[in-house]
Image 1 (cartoon, rainbow, N blue to C red):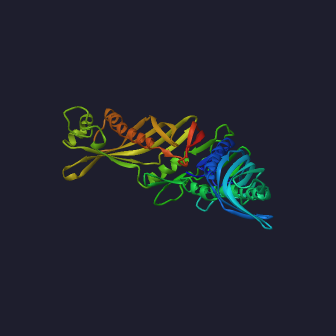
Image 2: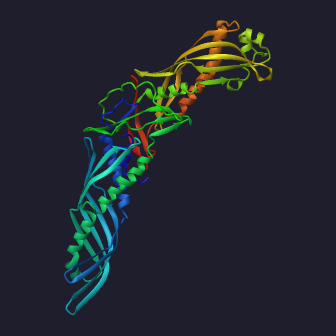
Image 3: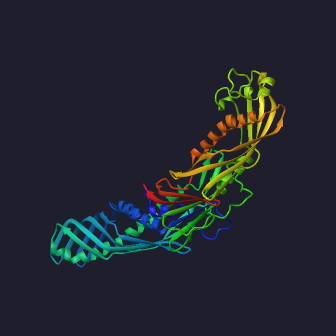
Length: 477
């Protein structure tokens, strides 16, 4: 990826006064920007080195000269500094850049009857080059960040030219003018370095931003929306961004009828980046999953250990043996469980613990000859699931720690004993529900990060309504 990493890091997430509480918030600190400029200068060095410079022609007194085939042979990295400008963006300045340029020359000297022409090559070393550019960071109409280079300036401290070939005394007649020409080509607001910086910011930088996943499809049915609510906010030590952080039903993207809770406040700036992820993100997904009938499933023998849902079996581990009334009333068949949520599963993060509360019905049917099903039992189930969370490969992963399930009889055509209910919970529901939850958790919840930027030295804190991710960054472009 040939972009300035400064832009990549800055625009991972980009706010000001937001009109609603965000579902996701980020903070990018000056440590991240300092690291980004170092990587950016490496990329700039690769792009400037080998850069072709337009031919130059001129005359100095009695000498006409042509300079051709110029290209940059070496770029010396400068020291740099990034500062944040309130309500604007960034100011990036450097000092001590050096350039080495090689090219060919030819000249014609004519004075009276004396005519001299020759050609050769030259090497120019330009030192003490300083440049400064402002980067405006905004937001377009689709909620993506935008970048624009403003007011680039570049100054060349000194230039030393050495010629190879030709008559040395003639060089003195035009070397000064040539040095000034080359200094002007490298420096100035329209010189080589500023042109390259403007291209990197306005063209390559925007291409990089287009790869930022502000919306992500989940399971082909849901749309995770990380678009920005407003422009970035800049403080002395960091910039902050605020994002929608909502999951929609992909076919009908309508806002959920509840707002995101306030996020945890923190003044920490010791890491490069901080991400506040609200439990609102999960809860909007579960709201739409319930609304569009995604939280229902028919459980059959194919989902459980062999024969568990048989009504007749030689062993004592099938449902017809444990709940004898089922085996008596529906012999030599199988049972199907229709499981559905009756309320929206709700995630709550607080004091180091993350809990998902859910409730639903388990409806029992016995399969009859001809493929028909006969209803005979409905149970109400509630569970309060404690999960552990971890960050890996820029995704949030989850694993079930505790899965206590309480089941009561809601409606029944047969007698059900407490032992039978216990069997249903431990032998059927837990065996099916827990693996399904872990399967979802193992898929991971993607965070809005460009592929070339990775987390390192990451810490996850679970606080009230908030998952706070503190991390350093590594660029691998």
